[in-house]
Amino acid sequence: MMRAWILPILLVLCGSVLAVGLVFSGTPGTAAAVLLVFVLLAGVNSPLAFPRPIGALEAQRRSEADGRPVVFWRPGCKYCFRLRIRLGRSARQLHWVDIWRDPDGAAVVRAANNGNETVPTVIVAGRPHTNPDPAWVREQLARSA
Image (tube, rainbow, N blue to C red; front, top):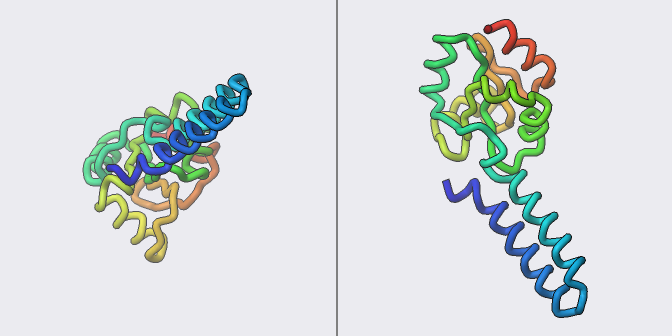
């Protein structure tokens, strides 16, 4: 779990150090702007930007019951973030598995991607799709409804 928070924590720390240096150099307005940018970057790269993850086994069980896709992701992945943003509110209807929190999820992704942990990997009807187009994922979600 801590691994998912390393990048956001480092971003906030770096932004804080930079902001303190700017305050001491006499530019508090710039310091506030820099700190805000770093805090926003930390938020985007944190697990908070995504729906609450569940385990791979639970996600697969739920997907079999309701037909909705399962998305395997990890914090800090720009492609995962792109998928999350482009899906908008419909992203909350998918089953999200953080592969850094769930070893079973990481194993599923490695099995689907020749041993690589390439994310996002979306499982639809038991078939893996690596880094699919967000419009296609939205279409698959609409079909499951």
